[in-house]
Image (cartoon, rainbow over all chains, first blue to last red; front, side, top):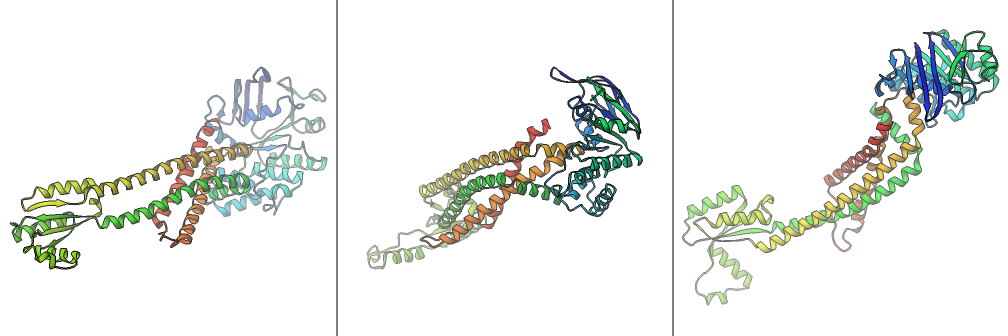
Length: 226
Length: 283
């Protein structure tokens, strides 16, 4: 599903990732644990092919960096769901329009189908009937739920979550993690990046956790990458 | 689908109202200048057309012309160039006498010196100096024709005035077009910068460049159309208000108004494309 081979990413003289090999299998849940500035976001941006590696190759599904055109990058992103720490909901439209946008980018214009699929996604994340709310009317936890609804409405193969609990209170954070496990249980692979040591430690009991240290991935050892 | 993109464009214009108002005001100003000048041109052209209607060619016939030759010439002129009216020597004499206000003076002459003629009221396509001169030369070579007159210098001056007016229209049109393209392009560029993060998110959600940029292009078209509608409305309002004070003003013809708005939308489209093409390459 995801394969990174000898990947390096440099920004000028600064090396964000170096000689990185990593695989995530179909339907796997993998956590990348690293402190701020260690390259988690770079890693996820490589997976969406928003940026390309300086060296090595990134493969997501059938899309391989280096051979991927602008149009194919768009196609790749349609197979992914992405959740960010700051939600990135579009403030100028309601939650229905935010979630439906993903379906529209994929050519779904039928109003009835849009309504039923968005309603289904919102119900799945515990926000039934909140389609007409605007992002500013929701709490942090609700915004993240809405963002997850947007990330799963098109049933992606992989869900990328960049610090999804970073700006939430502990209770909301715990609910969001539960939600990610539910999505994983329905078949999607999940890659979760976090700097939260207690969270990584807790997740390590259930799924594979790796540390990102000095631009390289290593098996998780509590306290090493904090 | 189209409706959704229009709604997206409208949402963009509404959400960034301050930029939109500034752009609308600038574009409105440019269109107003063009609209006022078009109104002036339309009225002058109307007046000139009325004058042009009085432009005619007079074909003087030789006394030896036989009725059959004359009728053939009239039929030919009628079908090729416009309405031909025969004026006999007697009628010419009567008209001349009428213009002088009596026949006493003319009776001293003893005989009618005036030739018979054909007055030719030309179709619009021949109402210019070049066509009238060519026609005059052609007719003058006919055996039954003595002389052809059409007031060449006057026609030439009229033509040159119309040409100047049209040139000024075109020059103003070009300046306005460039300024509108410039304003729209800058507005769209600002909109792009203001919404860069939104567009980045859309791209990460799987939106293609076309999906992301189409609403921006429509914003340019809609803004230009709104500005043009207001400008044309102001021009119509001003024409109605000033009509008869002291001169009669005809409103801008509906076809001109429609073309004006359509042209404005085209300029909006060009402005948006000019702004976005370099940005799509980077995006």
